[in-house]
Image (cartoon, rainbow, N blue to C red; front, side, top):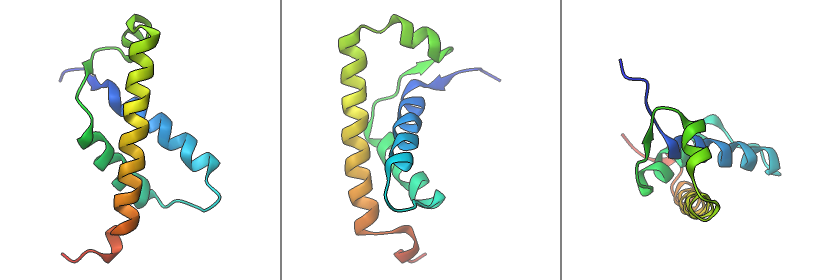
Length: 91
């Protein structure tokens, strides 16, 4: 099997980890997973063989743009999940 990953997955995971650490309320695993999926679906793909190599080869500006896109996608996903929680959906 190929040893590749979407670089944005790590960025989203890092942002969500920080969000759960800073949250005043406990966030369920399901909530985090729903937010991650929705956020990743809003972001472009960026497949890499080694995330460390990708990070090392990004300019500061490019890395900042990627982080800003991730923050925006997560914020939108959080609002979407809060408006319509997974447990409230039918079927």
